[in-house]
Length: 169
Image (cartoon, rainbow, N blue to C red; front, side):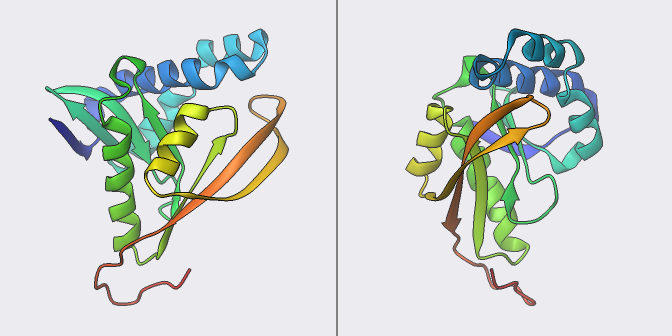
């Protein structure tokens, strides 16, 4: 059974490794070997996980972290979904998306938004399966990856809980 919970401080290293493993599978093939090696060496997921702390959600199965997700800026944008490749296809990504959507709705937003590399077909397919609609496609220079990268922006209308002070977006 998949459980979604807040990240715990003692698991920052393990979560950073999950992020890196997922990145290596989904994004590393799109970049040069030099860029991939630099990212693998520095693992930018570690400072990210430490900075966001319990604001990161963890999908856990049988007591083991399977993936992580976050809305980095606390708004309606799902900034991160990273699933350990050994757990792909077991519901971790879907569980994280649903939990993040719930948080977004409780913050008063009427939609959730996410971006994905156009060539990350598996993630794009998941988001569309979950009801996300493509809103835009564009190619832009990514300063971290040091490449022109085609991205797809998607959004999904959310069921809105009864919350006072709702934001209309």
